[in-house]
Length: 538
Image (cartoon, rainbow, N blue to C red; front, side):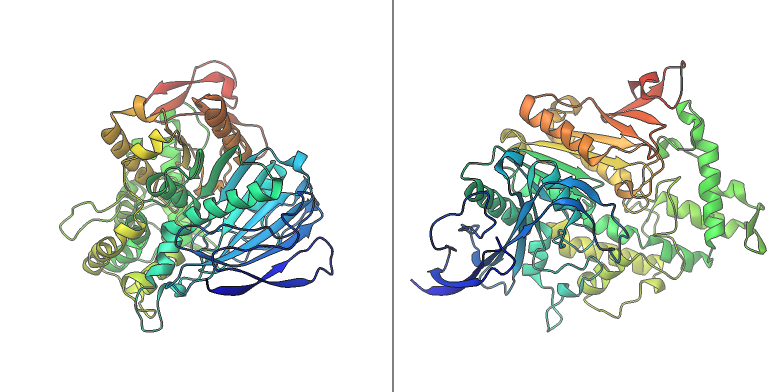
């Protein structure tokens, strides 16, 4: 058998030395047998099917209050206190013929008594398949929660704003890396993560979970569809399913601005948002500055025509062309003949990410450059209605089978006993909530309706909540609360009828009802208190 040299780093002390040991091509071993759980050292790793382990390293972490470096794309992360000491084990694998090098990082509480027996794989964001930072907020949070945490970079690197890996040197789609990013890498993470945990603690993982939002949400849905036995429970929020449709749809505003010959300022766009919220705020019976369900808001942007908007030292009068453009963005992209292609931006959500004249949102712009057109110089600011339609159809034709993540048949996941818990904000400014609702309704049709689907998949829609709850002032479901609901469902059979939500200051609470039910004020007591609401059929 061909043999190779693998570097194993045991980092129990700062000056730990690297050991060069001969091992079989499909395994990694250490001298002296498996390490004790209280020792942070590399362990033997069994590779996933079709992969080879290249290296395993280990690094010890003291715990305490953990701070994180500033993320250049997503901003600051709050420190996490009272974190137990943990061990980071990084496994690098490759898929022969793919020319890839995939890093998988596992963070394990060093003290076995701090481990609950659970494994939690974490997802990514934009073009980052997972956060392997040193330290990683997602993995540190998992360790504090008593989990073994895991993440993968899918072999595409750590930069969420870089999609250049999508093209090979000869200008073709890098299909192996795209396959990693779309589906394969989280499956590999599940296999390797559970194997490392089992070997590190000398006992078997009791329950395995996935936790992600946005790209991470899409990864969770992909697992339920493609690898239904990997996880007992999946928490997948604001999921980027229907990747091609929603990604290209977020470029619709550029075509609208060009065709309608308008370039509205932020002041004007904010005025439309504020007016829509004011008009539709009380449709749910409560005045709280939130549109409970954007689909019920029929307010027409043309009602703002002639209104004067203060913008710095200027005063702008809203014109009909701008109002028409806003209506088109809310309605969503269509063909040149008016046939609906996908859902539009939620009324009440902020325009400043995907509706800035001359500045397309980065993630879809990169998708178009490096995948759809394979032309890094492609300029999304020049789109017309006709070229948008061609782009939309090209994207779905080329990549739906790889990264569409839209298969409504979850029979294998249901049979395996898996539970999928998902929430999506009704003021999500990046991924239209209705795309997730559309998927849920298709699952209902395949599996016989809401009641049957609720046995294994529950969806919750959060009024006023933005993408992945970033910057939300409306009541938000915390990651801790959502994971708690999921573990009770998986481990105790207690399916969540509601999820607890609270505003950042704790002054407003809601119990978010499972789809298709909604929370409605009883007419008595404080409108800011969850106890004065009940779930009703919408």
